[in-house]
View 1 (tube, rainbow, N blue to C red):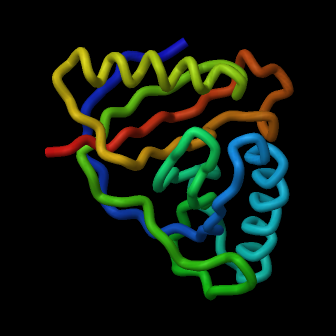
View 2: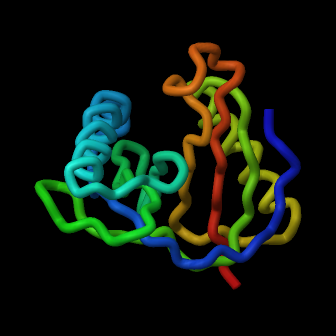
Length: 154
C-alpha cells in the first residue's frame, strides 16, 4: 500500500555510509551485517544516528545493486573500515511511503514509478529507501514502513 505521493525539495544531509556493489540476490545477505557494522562504528565514535537506516541506490541493473547503506548523522563520522562519510543529496524528489513487508517493495516501486510517469515527471538514475519502521520496531510486517524517494530530472 502506498501513501499519496508528493513532490518535495530535499537538502543535503550528512550520513555515515558503507558503499556496496552486490548481486541482487545477495542484497538481504549483506544488508544486516553491514547495518550492524555501521551502527557499531557510530557507537564506538559516540555519534548518534538521526532517523532510520537507508539504502541510496546509485545505479541498478538487472543483476547488480550499487548502493550506499547509511544513516543520517549530526556530526561527520571518522572513516573506519568500510564506514565513510557520505550524504543524502539535495534534489527535487517524488516521495511516498510504502506500508508492508520488504518482499512487496518491487511492486511498490513499480506502482510509484507509474505514478511518476503518469504525472509528467522524468526520474533521475538514483533512488533511496528509508526503512522507517521495520523488524527492529515490530515483528508484524504489515506495520513496516519504507519511505521511497526518487529524484526527478529538472
